[in-house]
Image (cartoon, rainbow, N blue to C red; front, top):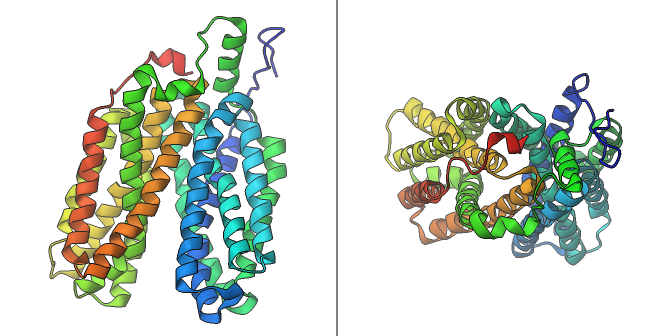
Length: 417
């Protein structure tokens, strides 16, 4: 520990323990991946057994309100993490989410279950922007995008592991076991965060500069004021479009491909290909963004996402070509959304970076609700193929238009350190 000034908070050195922040932020994001899958994994059991009085309608309500909680949590945490720091905020979020997830099996009826899911979502939604704010500041400036995209691989790994866990646990140990495991894993993460996660150096330096009067006071509200307003709106629209695509495709791809004449088994295989593409895209996109710039890479990724989504509207006779098109769509769709987060981390100064990421993630969660609803409406109308892919491609084009309004740079790089 070193103390630059007698009145400023100390700035930790992380050169000997830099792996811990990376691992712990990755784990926090993996908990978000848990939430992506866990309700879908237990809903069939809840409906089939009528547990707690669940029906298809009430399960849909619980799923929707859970996502609403995640969105509110993402927005609300921003000013808190900018005020109290990344470390304390992330520890508090994980503890809150874990305790409430552990309480879900204690629910006596649908209302209690839904309320606990909503409250747990507040903490869970706050984990992602806080962890990404930390990682965008922990990494060297030339590798910032890679740090964000690699951290987000935790999201998909968490989702896959949760799905595999559900195959083993739910039938033999009941739906409650999934929430017990999620809550326990989260609680075990808390002492690790407390012991091994330092405060963000960039955040501490920003606090020092503010307290010493050597930097202008930048308040969280400035995210929606002055020169930041247009930037924020453009990034919010892009985040909304990105998560609409992610959740819409994950929910309805097998069904849409079934309407196109592919088998149910083939549709599930294509869903797997989509998510394999997502993992590949996350590993590639960050490096390209670091080398070529945040804005041009994000724009290119959404353009290519639109192209490959439109390609899926064409009935391809070759199975290999179909899988290749879905894989490529996954590569660009999923990582395009994460590049928006990296772009946010690049544009905003540390004093308001947490707020900016929280609001981008929160608005994006609205897209996460709209995407499945849009796909469901098209499926109900019997026009999901090919119009579902047209709608998704147009959404990607809208993201391109939104990003076109955002400048590539907004401040000197030195101020971002």
